[in-house]
Image 1 (cartoon, rainbow, N blue to C red):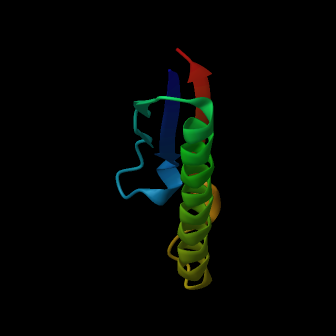
Image 2 (cartoon, rainbow, N blue to C red):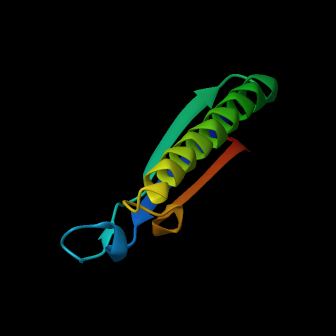
Amino acid sequence: MWVLMYVFSYSVSPAATSDRAEWRLLPTVVFQEFTNEERCKAAKATLEGSLKDAGSKLRSGLEDLKSIGKADPTHIIIAYNVECLPK
């Protein structure tokens, strides 16, 4: 058995919020079991690709907002880790 472990978190700088208090969300942690390493690695690759695309789309949207003075991509930190581990 193999376990896919996925951790995702992000935080928003106080400069990007209206209340000026730091807003930090706790990480989301997900575990999924797989019968073999190949299936786990395939799921990992798919998930990582999706997360990279999501981050790019978010930053692109923030760049659009930055151009009108409403947000800055440096105000958001996105972090994730995806691992396949033997059980």
